[in-house]
Image 1 (cartoon, helix red, strand yellow):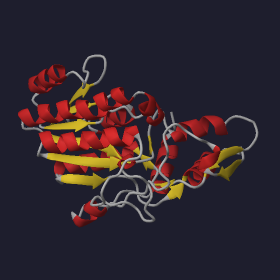
Image 2 (image 1 turned 45 degrees about the vertical axis):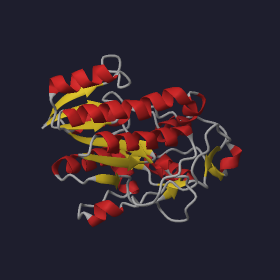
Image 3 (image 1 turned 180 degrees about the vertical axis):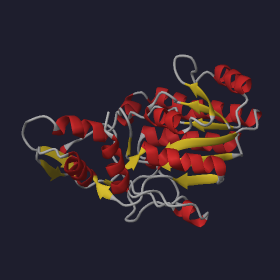
Image 4 (image 1 turned 90 degrees about the vertical axis):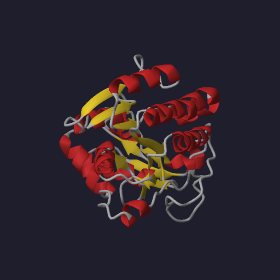
Length: 280
């Protein structure tokens, strides 16, 4: 299959390059391809004539989005519109990656695909605008929401904690009142591969199964990596940030279940696999 991959040099994009070696890949990323340049995107997609477009490119620095809102909307919303329009004009299927931040995090249960989004941050609002652009401009689409992502070389929470955990010092404080599904890029790549073979229209949640807090994730990471530095739980209020973090980032994979696709791996299983493979 011919696959046009935006954001191919990012953390998820690099994993997709490794997983999709059997496909004919076009790696679209800066500086050669700027998704905010509509003509550039359209010409590149038209020249390659892909069977599918996987759209990973995004501005994902949550706090920077608060202070650079125009840039966030230019990349996450307008850029997604350009990619979706180009995919539709080539009759390519579009898989667009989105985020748990489209929800406000206030529910007491995991969010499923039929819950109404209500973002609290510029990042979440700009990604939701990108979802809407995908729906508007490319009917043959799947939007895959993921959360708490980590992968080879990072950057991610996992890589930050590994670096800090290897250093001597006072106990590390880690937030214990935000909950989600830690998710490896390998797990997401496996899901996207299945979606290329078995398309599901609309929205699909693609985080790993099981749930924990950031503290629980760090504790499991330290145990599996045999890091001895002490970590202690703390509240979100001890680490104020420009963009509010959702207390609940848990995503239910209802659509995968309804469609009869295999469940995502459990987060601890995915983490064990990642650590065993050797972290870079």
